[in-house]
Image (cartoon, rainbow, N blue to C red; front, side):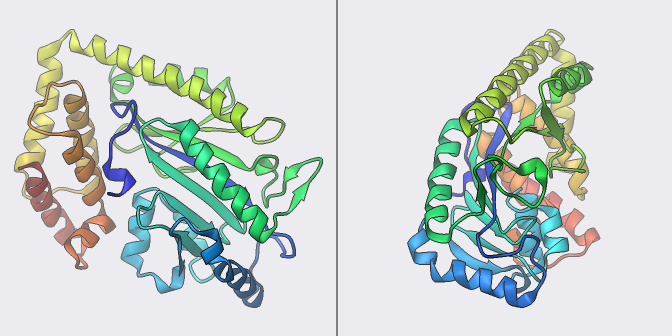
Length: 335
C-alpha cells in the first residue's frame, strides 16, 4: 500500500514526514540547461540504476502525462515548480510505494526525498542517509571541506537537508491561537509554509513545518531541533482541541454539518472539499464522528484532488465534470 494511505505516529495532527537532501554531482555544471549535459547526467544515473536499487524506476517528465505529473504534486511527491520550470529537462527516480522519489535536475542535480506517514523523523532520516550515502559512492558528489555539500542555492549548503512535517491544525485556527504559535516558531529558525511548500497557501488547515538552517549543524541536530518544535505544536493543537470540546454541541454541530455536506452534495470544488474535510478529520480523530475510519479520510484526501480524481476514475475531466464526479467519489468512499 502506498505510504500516503497509511496512518503513522501522531497521525491525528502529523499527516506526514519528509526528508530531502539536495545534491550535485562532480563533473557537471550546476543549473543544467544544455540538453547534451542533461542527457549525460541522466545516462550516468540510468547506467547505475540496478546498483542504486530500492526498486527505483527512471522516468523523464516529458514522457509522463500531465494528469499523472500533477497528481504527484498533489501528493507532495514532486514540487509544483519542477513540472512547470523543468518539464522538458527534468526526470525522476521513484519506487512503486512512492515513499522514495529523487527529482533529477530540479534546482540541483538530485533532490533525494523519503516520505512516511505520521511523525517519524528518525527512521525517515536514517533511510534517506542510507540512500544518500549509496548514491554518493556510486555517482560522486560535489563536496567542500569548508562548506559541506555544494548546492545551487547557498541557503542549502552544508548538509543540504530539508526536513519537514505536514501538520493538521484546525483547533489552533478555530481558537485564534495559530498566529501566536507561528510567531513563536519563527524565533527558532523554523519555516511555516502552505500545503505545497514555498509560496503556497494553507488549504484545509494543513501547514508544512521545516528547518531553515542547513549549514553549521549535523543532520541529527537539525532533525532533533525540528522534532522538539513539532512535538510542542502537536501538544498545543491537542490542548486547543480539548478546549473546543468543552462546548461539545458547537463542535459536534460544526463537524456534522461538514460531514453532511460531503455526504449529500451533488457537486463540490476541491478547495471546498478540503476545507470541509478538515472538520471531518478533526471529528474522526476526536472520536466524535464514528461514521468514518482513518483510512477513509486518507482516501478522501488522496483521491479527490483534481488530477488524482482523474487518475482514480481513469479519464480526463473538465472543471465542471470534476466537481460533479468528486461528489460521487466522496459518497463512494464514505459509504
